[in-house]
Length: 445
Image 1: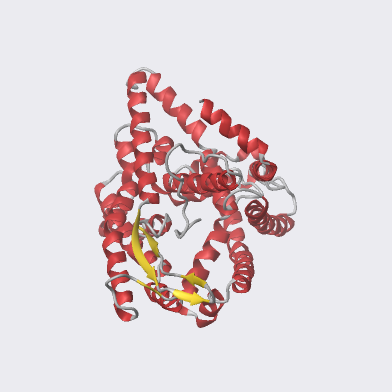
Image 2 (image 1 turned 90 degrees about the horizontal axis):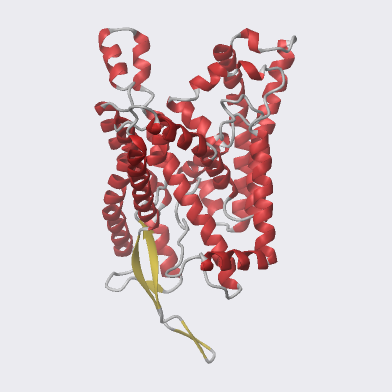
């Protein structure tokens, strides 16, 4: 406890770090305030139907990423999801389109151009999603919830506000990245997830202490299991395979450069949470078969309608494994890594430069991705096991899936930034032993 208080004192002493933390908290408070500002022309008391819709399925995930703004019909209802979608599209285009490949190699100027294109694409995606969201509002709430007399004015104003709200949230994320601590977009998503935790925890406590709920001992067992799941997830996020790289000696004047051994840290989970997000989106396709209203399609829809059912979790598990390999192939490029090593005079001991190095790196990535994908898929279906064990649906989501991995990844990344500031001022880090490893090199959201 004394060490913790001393660390807090050191954080407060560093003016730059203190200002960054205060700026981060201030911008997050603005975001949380906006998440509860209802769109003009909608009765806030008539949002029950929308909140019921946002409690399950894909809509629940969208509501989670928006920090509850989706279910509140807020000005930030679409949240940061359009920006995430635009970022994914740009990443995929970076593999197939030569123009984006050239931008990726241009350094800072190329990144600035890519960011600008991502912003334009975000506006375009939000422009398509906003009318769909308003149509969904009419379907879920009914006409009595809309108190603005001129419906044409309501549509135009709501679309403009939703687009502006998403762009403002994106701007907040960029300001957090520039003026605050950590990755702003990731922090905004994490805060939206954390905002749901107190209510979920309170609901679980009430259900356990009530008659027939199992009592406080069962709740303590659940908390121990949650702690162990968090520990395992931290191990998954931080686990790396270090590939040794030897650099040739170079003599420039009377100084020697190179001749040292370094390491390439290949992450076991290089794909981050993206495989789970892709797999979750695809899992809603089989449910659409029930709309054909035949015996076969109804059976398929029924089999995949329960997230605690065998077929749902089996297919979900396989999709996560497949998408882990797919997204790792997109984000990790052995050819570029081998070329960079060759340009800098580096080589892997015992492996010839060029094609052999590419094959070696590709083989290593394939081998370490397999256990990583299996573990990631198991984490993805853990909430289903938690629900089967009797944990309420909201609290069960924290036992695995997207929520857990985003929480772990973003917290580690933020703590790494804080520790870096402490170590630069010659203070001790946040931990007595070892350094905190963030998600450097991993895909972040």
